[in-house]
Image 1 (cartoon, one colour):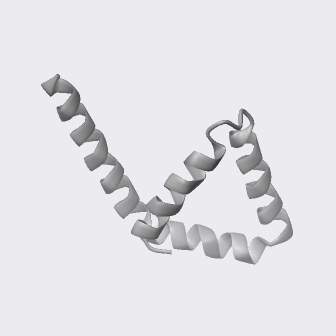
Image 2 (image 1 turned 180 degrees about the vertical axis):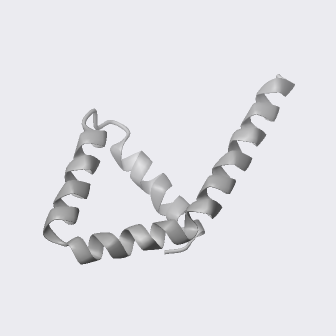
Length: 74
C-alpha cells in the first residue's frame, strides 16, 4: 500500500468507525490477534508501514500546518 492509498483507506475507516465508541479497543484487538495468529503477516505489515511512515508523518505535518494557518485567518 502506498501513502495515498493509506490516506484514502484511513478516511474510509474514520467515517466507518466514527460512531463506534470502542473503535480504539477494536483496533487493538485486531492488532494483537494478527500479531499472535499471523506473526509473519504482522511483520510484513509493520515493514510496509515503516517504508512509508516518513511520508505519512510529512503529510500529516503539512495538513496540520495548513489547518493552523487557515484557523489563523479567521
